[in-house]
Amino acid sequence: MTTTYTIQDAAEETGVSAHTLRYYERIGLLAPVGRGPGGHRRYTEGDLGSVRFLSMLRATGMPIREMAEFVELTRAGDHTIPWRIEVLEKHRDALRSRMADDAAHLAALDRKISIYQDLQEEARKTA
Amino acid sequence: MTTTYTIQDAAEETGVSAHTLRYYERIGLLAPVGRGPGGHRRYTEGDLGSVRFLSMLRATGMPIREMAEFVELTRAGDHTIPWRIEVLEKHRDALRSRMADDAAHLAALDRKISIYQDLQEEARKTA
DNA sequence: ACTTGACTTCGAGCGCACTCAAACATCTAC
DNA sequence: GTAGATGTTTGAGTGCGCTCGAAGTCAAGT
Image (cartoon, rainbow over all chains, first blue to last red; front, side, top):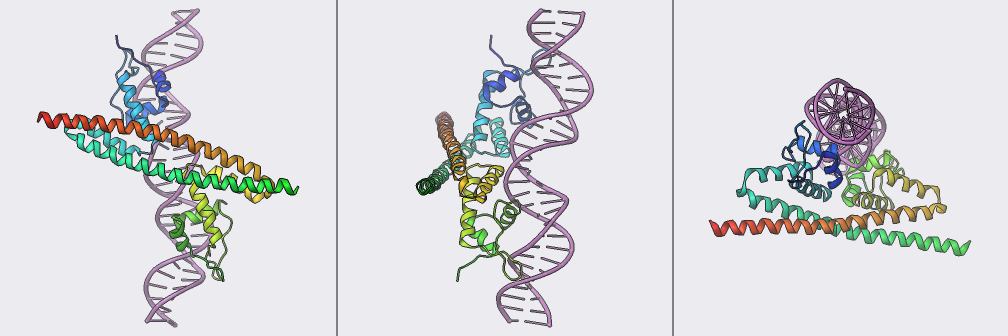
């Protein structure tokens, strides 16, 4: 007795909208999901895992096109593992790079805020 | 004698394309830039500073709409400084939140890569 | 003066990632 | 069994942020 999820449940579980779940399946990002007797989708835990993984890639800025390529590799069999590692490492490096940029930008933002706060303090005293 | 920049120079200086520089000016993100005798834009250092600031906001995920609102506030005068601080602080919080998510995602990505590497190592030994 | 390349405006077009609509089927609770 | 929510497919529509094209003007080198 394996628990399954309706599309709405899957949406709530993963934070990905039902519309988007169908969309991902349509474009091949997600393998065809199993169906109940009436043709309704039944998401397994494994499906949710895939969705969460994809969702993480998206959140970290990977384009759909590239995600599709990765998914293709996983479908092609175990011999593509080196390439999959390569894709993920490349993405990890891009993410690290973005995080570094973000840190610098955060500092700049803090400086800007400080400047405004000083300006505001100045105005308060003058008033 | 204040140095000025052609649109191409400004593009190289700021990393924002000439097309985008005109676009930003068109939609009011950038105050009208000074012109040379023939109507060509002449960017001042101050203009470049504005562009760099806007570019930083964009890079950190602020929507153009929100940037425009901020720019509006700066045009409206010094009495809007508290609101500007509010906008920047809100954005800073969003950025911090994204950075935290990124850190978690990075860890997940590392784990996934490790799993693949172990799998690959296993395959090597078996072969 | 002439050529070559950069610049101008303005509207249109594009790529991305959804998001929705319509018309219809099925499931759930009463 | 019936109402009402939820599901299905397919194609079309949306919002964002550029990006480009056309037609014309201007600048710099020879």
